[in-house]
Image (cartoon, rainbow, N blue to C red):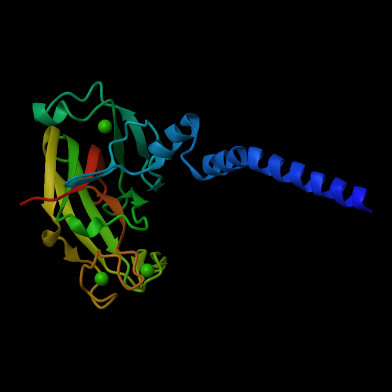
Length: 253
Ligand SMILES: [Ca+2]
Ligand SMILES: [Ca+2]
Ligand SMILES: [Ca+2]
């Protein structure tokens, strides 16, 4: 009996020693699982994280060459809504032309009853505060008078569900959230930077939402949810033709 007890004690001691010796290995593995991703994964993560630098929030500069990442765009009805090379787009403001990089988003096509289609993207992310910016800015490459107009839409979340519910029977107008808009008439040649104070946007669906632009993520609201461009021709049976780039929210004094 005594021998069995001694044997069991030895077994327990050996087991404890084993555990102590292995502890650093286990904790290292646990730390590794909870810690930073390996470098190969980090690259992917950094590509999908939206750039948020002091004073500016980059919506997209299209330098990925894709409308799927880092930000996913939806394109509707426009004949050509695609990322294209900027290599032939050299005119306009030289400072802007020098900052548009390799790619931009081309929006081009015929209109039916003024409307030529458009594009949009969802912006809201938890803990990304878009309410700190007061200005919408983008670079536009125009093709002279007759290029068409861009109706810029932005939408907030008034029913606190981080979604935009729209009425397909009524021009896809949001039915619970505010949509505010600003029209940019593109009548110039080459690149030009356009900065629009958010205060200059107007309510596009009065009576829906609370009719107040509230981009803050408070009370369950997603705040500033999404943006869209609606392409409007200069005449009913006309067409649109311009590129957009460096779309961002900024803070101006
Ligand atoms: Ca670009
Ligand atoms: Ca909503
Ligand atoms: Ca609102």
